Amino acid sequence: MKISVIGTGYVGLPTGVGLAELGHDVICIDKDESKIKTLQSGQVTLFEEGLPALFKKNVESGKIRFSGSFQEGIENADVVILAVGTPPDPVTKEADLKYIFAAAEELAQYLNDYTVVAVKSTVPVGTGDKVEALIRQKNPTADFDVISVPEFLREGYAVQDFFHPDRIVIGSNSQRAQKVMHELYRYFEGKTEILYVSRYSSETIKYASNAFLAVKIHYINEMADFCEKTGADIREVAKGMGLDKRIGNRFLNAGPGYGGSCFPKDTMAMACMARKAGVNLSLIENVIEKNAARKKQMAHRILEQVKDIQDPKIAVWGLAFKEGTDDCRESPALEIVQELIAKGAKITGYDPKASENARKILGNQISYAADMYEAARGADVLAVLTEWPEFKKADLDKLSSLMRSQKIVDCRNMLNSNEAFEKGFDYSCIGQTFKTVS
Ligand code: UDX
Image 1 (cartoon, protein in one colour):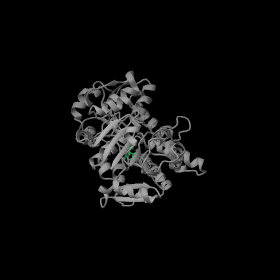
Image 2 (cartoon, rainbow, N blue to C red):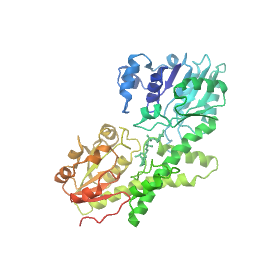
Image 3 (tube, rainbow, N blue to C red):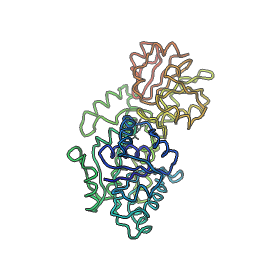
Image 4 (cartoon, protein in one colour):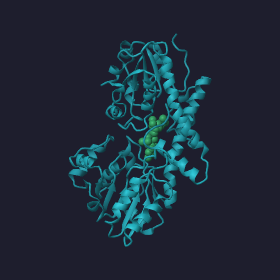
């Protein structure tokens, strides 16, 4: 089939490459000319495990190409996928749909044969109605259906999640559209559940899923606070909880609070939508507030470790919002670092992939180290802020020899507490209490 994907970001690019790999003819469109030029030159524009190889293969086979022209992309497409950003409005925190509506307006003029317009971006319930009305107004004779096909791709795992989704949700009551989508996703027949629901339900499933995951993460973070007061170990508690199939063992890693380009914006957008509909989602409202406060709580724990030191030097391991990605949007690590900077701390940060993106946000407010040990040189405390697996394998003897004082605040429970104590560190982490080395 001929597919057009509008938007070549963290959702659009993996989706386009994945569909090309399934054998479809894909054209990815973006208004950002520099991004299109980079993609056309054969360069992937974001870090995603496994994407470069698939990208290269499908560019070379001609199954995927890139253009800035809507006309080129839309005219012969069977399916047009909208994968543009829906960032939070800075004031209202509602999902800003300007890119969705701009894309809908522009593509409308090029629709000729029957086309399915699939909204993959995360959009408030009822947006499909607005997109449909906009296209009809722009091109009254166009033969099309607007459907909702939400994405469930985790950053850093987008390729894996594309080919091994837990479910595919198709939001449409149009038999014609469902037939087209059945053809598009034929590869997944028998591999995963393809759920056909109304457009409203599909739009809701995305927000309800992300908000639930955010609540689950905040729940385990609050349980961690409880464990710190009772002497329990949150990792043992999470393991015991997770064996209950109704709870499940994923998204039970206590940490500094969730971040990223989705959970923060989707929880806020969900709360806004509900308030406008006259429903009080008190649980989600509470999680939004407490999750933000948790970053400040983490910064306070780090500063407590160096409160008696003149001009303390703080080493930070991890700047990305989570492991496996170079993305720093709404990164808990950066929010904590900014809190530390505000209190006058001198910081050296290290991240395996995200330093350049962190520098775009922090500039020279911190120093950037080329490796984890360089970041720790001369530091009075080490803060572990992103759950990169390499931190688990840290050589604590080497770390101890490099630091000015041996203090660690492990906000991701990456290190082995017993080993840290044996090596003489004053070690603290999340959801456990220890005697500190006096
Ligand atoms: C999320 C959803 O998982 C995905 O399905 C949706 O399509 C997009 O939003 P993503 O934002 O990439 O994906 O990251 P995710 O892996 O969900 O992590 C979000 C945040 O929660 C990160 O800051 C991560 O560090 C944190 N997290 C995650 C925890 O603190 N504990 C956990 O157990 C899991």
